[in-house]
Image 1 (tube, rainbow over the protein chains, first blue to last red):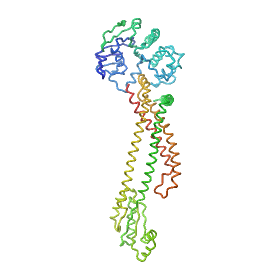
Image 2: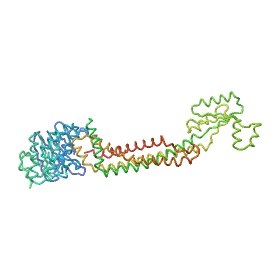
Image 3: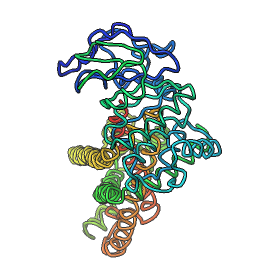
Image 4: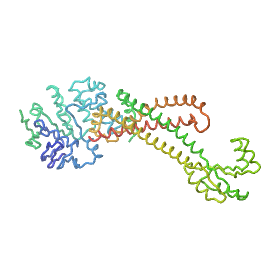
Length: 227
Length: 294
């Protein structure tokens, strides 16, 4: 599903965040991306949904060469990918329901479809009762659930999560991981950059470790590997 | 784009005005202030232009007829003048009529000339386009039986120069003013959009196209432009109606009359509204463009 060939990324300030990455990720996989801060994890995932473009090399999503994609084609790619952030990125002036519906309005779904799909994901993340509340009335864990609901509401083939448990207490983190497991069980591919050792070592999946912009370890069912 | 999406764009643009109250207030104020200045300036410019046009249209060419011309020759000259598309308002004044004018103007002693009238028959004509006066006067000089052509040489050139310079300066100032207004408003709108950078970023990340992001902002800019134009339109209408009623009766003659209240004030209000809409839409368009490259 995702193929990277000799991907090299150098930022304008001279930082090399990706120094010849080659990888294959298959449909339906659950992949952790681990490594110290500044190792190039975020760049790795941003290049998949084209928030960053590689300086050299190729990033493929199915048959699409993501780096070569024309600007007007980018929205089509992003509609196939859901993204979850550490800081949730919810719109403070929209309530839970509206924050989720937003992702469907953008792709011009009909109001009936929007109602149906939003209610479905609200149920999946357990927030049906809080649909009319605003982000500042929710706990961190609840906000992250809204963010996850938004990322999956248009049934993407891939969900990318950048430190989704980074701002959450351990107990809440397990709840969030439980949701990701459910999403993965439905066949959605998940790529998650994380620093959460407990999670990686307990819920075993493929682990890709990045350091200094290169993959130093790629192990199915591997452990976190850092202290 | 389907009708649901269009409805959504309209709904979002209205909601956003309500949600970002202070920024809305700042943007509307910026539009209001600049449109008042633009409106006052335009009122002055358009009235000055009217006076300038009056002055220009008042410029007359006096064609003195050759003494040797008999009635047939005068008729021929008249035909030549009438056939020239660059000329209008052709009036004949015989040498007796000319003398009457002179007697009226300078006194009864000139009545002596009634014995042997030394004056010539005259044609008074005007150039269809006043700016052509000099050129067309030279042309008439070439006609048979046109003895001399007078149009206030020197003075007319000077008058036209002053009027043209005045008009050009006015146009340049007006354009500069509108550009300043656009810059000011696009900056204010930019601040409101910077505050909503995250919203745009999220829209782009969930797969919104650029036009989907842009349209509600542009609509919002248009509403701001319309709202900002209301007060200037009211103020300028009231001010012009009152000033007109106060000044107009005090002015004598036709040359220095201000533009009558209608349709001028409707035209001006229409123009202010259009400028408001344009700068609102343009300001939004320019400001949101920067944030679309996510």
